[in-house]
Structures are given as C-alpha cells and as structure tokens.
Amino acid sequence: MAKENQVTETNAAENTSVDAVCATNLLDADPEFRRLFNVRKVQKSRKPSFHKQGQHKFKRLSTSWRRPRGLQSKQRAGIYGKGALVTVGYGSPALIRGLHPSGYDEVIVNNVDELALIDPEFEAVRIAGAVGSKKKAAIVAKAAEFGIKVLNPGKGEV
Image (tube, rainbow, N blue to C red):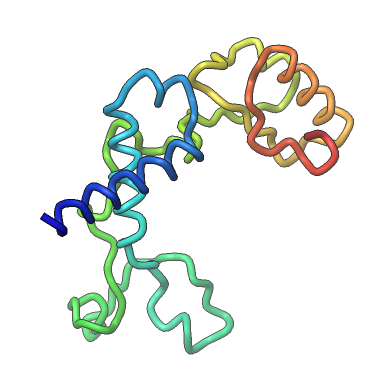
C-alpha cells in the first residue's frame, strides 16, 4: 500500500511540474497531450547523451553524434561502456515530437508580416537569428498585440 502511495505521489509531482512549464490551451484541452508530455519528460531523463566516438580524447572532435562505421569499432558493436548508439527506441511519442517544451509548435519568423499566418493558440514564434534589433523589437511588439508567444524575445523586450 505504501508503495502505491509513493507511485501516485511521484506521478502527481510530475504532473505539477509539467503544469508549471506547459500551461497552454492545447495541453489544457487534451489530457492525452499532457500525459504524452509527461512520458517524454521521463524518456528524456533516461536517455543517454549521444557523442561522437573518441570525442573525449581529442579537442578537435566535436561532441555531435556521428555513427561509428569502423569494422573494429567497439561502440558500433554495442560493447557496454563504449557509448550508446542512437536507435529508434529513444524517440519521443509521435504526437508531440518536435513540439517546444511549452507545448507550442515553433515557427521561425523573419518579419512582421509573417505574424499574420500564426495561430496563437497552437503556435509560438521564434525570431530568426539574422533579424536585427530594430526589426526584432517591432516583431515582439506586434506579437504582443496579436497575443502570440515569442520564445526568444531578447533581454530588453520582455
């Protein structure tokens, strides 16, 4: 009985943490999305960090994942302790794959005119990196007017 209480307490704790992070209309409307966000959160906590083979030995090797292809590669052979391989089983649920942790679908915006195509209930805006500070301030102001969430508003525009 005590074990069951612990399980329900941990599930309640996960739900409250997701509630704090993901309070969107999509998640409020559909409990299945909320459950899948909890599933994704647990899966990500158990997922190893995938690194390029030998990246810890040489500074010139980046940590970004590249599949090991050598015939004598211990990592490719799946030897324990040599690093995990990227496989299908580590994927997140298909319904929420690619969504921002806030529950919105990300849309990259380059100018103010593109904000007219955004659905503020399901989509959030990420301002493109090449956009300057003047245009970025205009985009943030117009997004606030339309009620659109901006994922990278900058330091002074919040």
